[in-house]
Length: 127
Length: 127
Image (cartoon, rainbow over all chains, first blue to last red; front, top):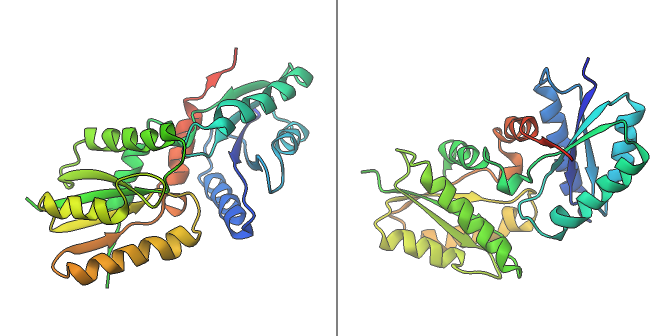
């Protein structure tokens, strides 16, 4: 067991259905049962729970020794460039024994262009 | 030639760097040279240009006979559920001869969970 957890960090919304979409996405990622990821959690920067500190704490409570943080954001704005790294720094100070990895935000990920072509190829014709 | 064009529709931002990120994503998708897509364009719902009508008009001017519209949105809010379909309806009335296909928005696309695992697997260790 690597005890490697994946924490998907979304912005969070006042629309609960948007937050639920993120939680459902977490379920879908979990459902793929990646052999290199032991658990998949979701957290929100603001407006929804669990917060990032709560999500990280949940990983620790569940035995994580390594946490991959994935910013579920399209653009590299302040949230991606400053807010999320700051939250990770605060966690790192308290948990120097846990490895943290920060993934590329979604909008800059190398896999995204091919994903878009996949989605486009499945588009239905309008009635 | 199918004259099939892909129009990536983003929200648009007051931050020009965010809009430029979308344009760069369009370049990356274009760079994959999908044999089933003749051109890749980008448009914005608001706050940036080209607008959706402008993007669709550009496709027509460039000879599109079929346009796949991809909503580059994480959540199925009003923009995805109403604003984009309304813009397409307006276009369809004026161009009944052009096939329109509306793809799933990014957040609901079936390819996204695997994309996230790909991104996570490439995450670097923090210094």
